[in-house]
Length: 171
Image (tube, rainbow, N blue to C red):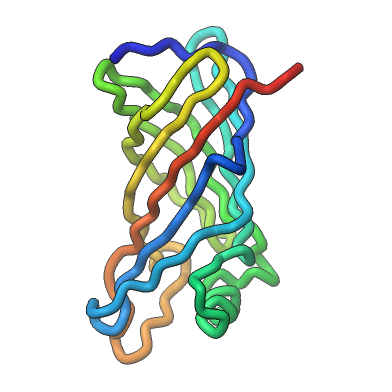
């Protein structure tokens, strides 16, 4: 599949986009799952084909369907939303392959700590006015200062699953 994405500004369609996380706890026996209810972002495709953009997650909007766990995730033990209300991913480059794979390079910032993070997304839909990317990748929470691990219950990587739909921004 070869698709040319139009140059210009693109805005995240928040109603058609989602960002979810999954992390095994209880020594890998139970998976804690959640979604960020508030996401925003946008990007630009320049005339030379370069892509830049930003995805912003409201860290306090994490919803695991367990109020006690959500409160703990918002605390200084995890996301520390009082000091760091946003989690961001700044896209530095995105390259579309012939098979619909999109290699994305950028920087992930959690708790004020930025790290390079690259992943491969899949272009699941594209037309002149909308582009949808799906991706699943892992993040090591320890790299961002989220190190709480009582009794060794929460080791391993966190899996992030996204569906991001961008629409052409109206000038």
